[in-house]
Image 1 (cartoon, rainbow, N blue to C red):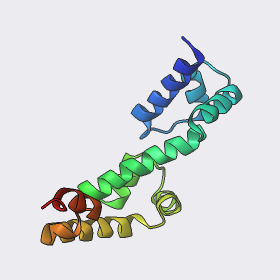
Image 2: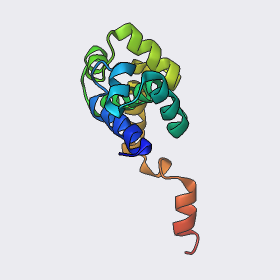
Image 3: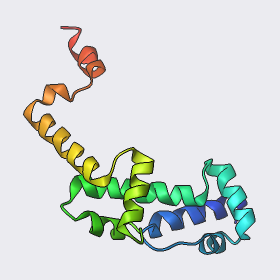
Length: 134
């Protein structure tokens, strides 16, 4: 197994297990590296640390659940791997610029607007490219 394959193996491990508590030790073992060597190689390959990648994965999963489910903020925070709701709220805001409740409300408003006036949600460049010839 090449160095690249070993790092990708750890990334796939994060992708599959992001909702679990994951340590640098577990990730480096999945790639068969020391913690420090793994950290350096992961950052070199993906331009983020394993922790940053894991956090981004959790935030993206939370955004999907906030948009597409009725689960409570607490349920979502635990489902995506955060250990506490306050930590989830702070981290979500740090990464997205808004709190989870505000994000959910904004997504619902945008969906309502799209259903009410679909023409306002179609990008102008799409409209121009498809209707300028007529």
